[in-house]
Image (cartoon, rainbow, N blue to C red; front, side, top):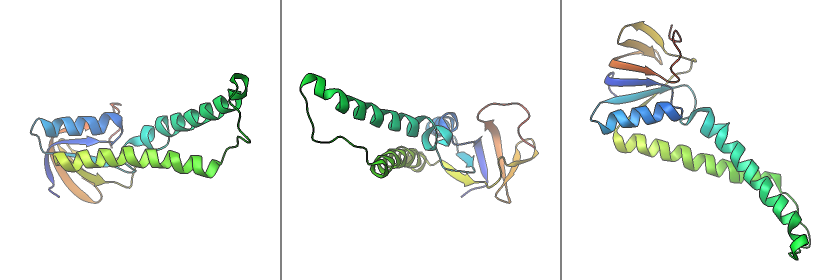
Length: 148
């Protein structure tokens, strides 16, 4: 992994990974700094897992109401362990897709254990105890003053 980039994006959430991939598509040497999993809260713990569970609950509710239309089942029940496994499969598929795009476009993933990398000076930051330089550093979400 190089330590010099055209673009370093802080955060591999939905905005961050898209920014890094697009920079790479435009021929820039790009990297993403992330402390957790790619996809951010949305793919891993928020939007996608929630929508998966909501979808499963809707299907359960529809099955219960099927008797009104003449669709009868002997027993309709929820196996929550299977629902959770199904949900995790969806999360794994989507985050794996982001990682595949990183690999395909040559975007490096730089792990960082802190909430944010340490900004040393303009165009230079430290992540995982290693310095990185970039012509452009993009912080996603774009909240001013978040880099030390």
